[in-house]
Image (cartoon, rainbow, N blue to C red; front, side):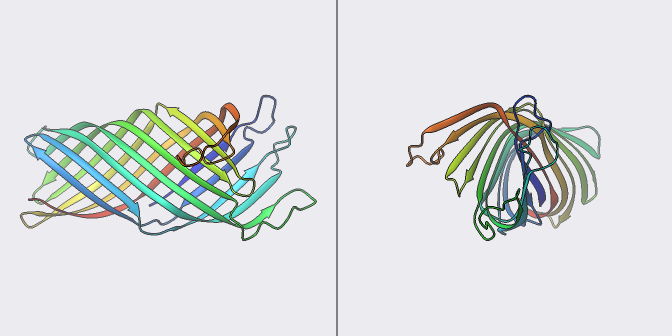
Length: 274
């Protein structure tokens, strides 16, 4: 899987640049281990899928700031190498199948998807205004955790001929709740953002090939995206997601943060039916 999460800070009114800060966290060539279970009864299918990354190094993160209100030119920039501390994807729901012809079937359903990614960085390079601050290279500057709760409706159309089935699946969401936590390690400051959105999609193309009476080999291509959406920022002096820490809220910015994500990749799976 590949992709990118965008972490955005918006400026106050009158700023020339549309962003105050933008961080791009990349997922580069991540290998996922996925386990899926389906239970079928007549035309109904209940499904549950769980995935986690089996690789940790995900590429690089860039952090760009525009701190001059009179200009659209960047004022600060840094580049970091990043690792995954934690990753988990859960997908569950129910579908009903309809036979439209001898070869074509349609499935419709409702589902829930949970995305969790948790990164830490190591600064590789930076460009700050003169005079340059202390050397940040090699330090852990920012940790970032993002969680997306996605409720969606799905439609899938399949064409089956002999032992081969090709299909296209579309998931669309009218309601997403997400939050992220940005830990500025060097200043010991936590920024928690909360988001509500009403559009997300996932598209998948797949080919199934039967291997015997009970086996099936599947190849798939997928893409999912959450367009840029605004949310509120809460600032804390300790980790607000840790129940053992009692942090104090030190700031609040309505519509001060933005989130966007895009993921794509390929999948190979084997299914055994019993």
